Structure formats: structure tokens, C-alpha cells
Image (cartoon, rainbow, N blue to C red):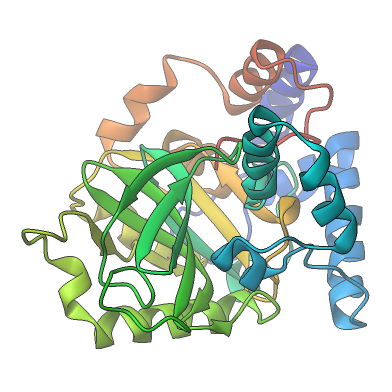
Length: 322
């Protein structure tokens, strides 16, 4: 598939004069996307997911209060716990927190509404974590559901001074004592998973601005919580964001549809690209420091190699790390 895509890209690129300042989608990819099975499948699943959300036919698969307070999710679960060994109980607890994050997939199909309905987010290099603050502690879990850190924080519910009823759950990337907050699931017992992405981000920004102490490392509260730079997906705004000096090492770019609700698992409404892929795929210029990371590969070659290395059965049916 990689050779075919490269050949097709060369053929298409020779037939277009691209204005780097023009707004809208990349002209090459407006044709290229319709010629690949993977892109067509992604576009179809994206439409189906939006339709389910529009008609309320979706499940969040999340009982956030159970996650926050370590409650059992059903009588059946309770009976099973009684019968398990101590080791199995620990395994069950890990399972409880496993696969709760919303994950991305390669942005193979370029949405027609990208510039109007999507948001691009800078993703730092780090460890993806689900942060749960309740009962006076803040606990970070990895994607497999294992506890990786337990500490005191100023998040509602996250320290010994917090009220028992308070609890907060955040989707974060952890790096160097900083939790970069990707998404808001709940804050002080108010749930947001069924709200659209743009509303969740508005509320997240508001909550972090109302609690500036979260961004300060002090004795007893060593870890900090920080927002992540983002912008609407118009070409000029994406280009400007890529010029910004940032305090972290950039891993990639996440693309969220502004209407996506928070659902665990892979979503066609969350895309992922490496920084150096933006000029080729979206016609968005990036600084030279990002271009060097391609090591001479095209985007299609890199994606194909990545999928093979990680034993992905489909070009789009598995997610990236984020």
C-alpha cells in the first residue's frame, strides 16, 4: 500500500499548483482521500458516529462516580469479588480502570469540515494517564488501568482537606511533574462526558483559570496541572500555533471534532498526525525543527511502517498512543 500511495501522491501533486496561503483543505488530498479504502472507511465511521450522537444513540460506558469512589458497578461484580482471591481482586481493580480513555486514530481521511468543525491540540511527549481525585487522594492510572502514581493535589477531592463529596476525573499526558490536561470528564462531582468537546474545553479552561494554584508546585503539592495549546483547524491558525515556543517536547497533533462526546476507546472523531506530516497532508507549514523528524519518509510510508511494527491489523482500525 505504501508504494501505491507514494506513486499516487506524486501523480496528483504534479497536477496542482498549491497556494500555501489559501484557506480550506489541501487540494491534493481532496482527491487523494477518495481513492483509498482506509479513508473511505474512516469517513463513513465518522458520519455514523456523529449520527449516533445526534440521535442520542451512544453509550459512554462510564460510571464516573464508581471510578471516583472505587464502587462496584453491579451486583454481579460484587458477587464475583467475594469469590476471587486477593490477587484476582487486584487484577479486577486494574481492569476497572483499563480502557477508559478516548483514543485517536491516524487522520487518513481529511474531513471536509476540518477548518470549521475541528480543533487541533499539541500533544506533549509523555505518559497518557487517567487522573482520579477523590477521598482525599489523587491517583493516576495508565491506559491498562494500573496505578502509576498517588499523591496530593489541589483538584477537587484530591487532598485530605477536600470534602468527601468532591471528585474530579481528567484525561492527561504526564511529563516531568506536569499533568497536561487533554480533556475534562468530571470536576467537583459535575460530569461532562456527554457534553460536546468544545463545551468540555470551555469548562476546562474556566476551571483551570479559577484555580491558578493548580499550576504552582509547592511542598505537599508537587505535581502541577496545565492546559495544552490548541487552535481551530483553519490553515492560518494551525500555522501560527506551530510557530509558538512551547515548554515541552512535541509528540504530535490531536484533532478533535468539536461535537465529539467522551467515549472510551478509539474514535474516528479524534485524529492524530506527527508534526512533520502537516505540510504534506494539510498544507500547513511547520518550522524546520519538525521537518527533520521525518527521516526522509513520506507520511504514508511512516504510517504503514508504524502499523506493521505495532502489528496493527488495519491501516485505521487501531489508535496511536494518544
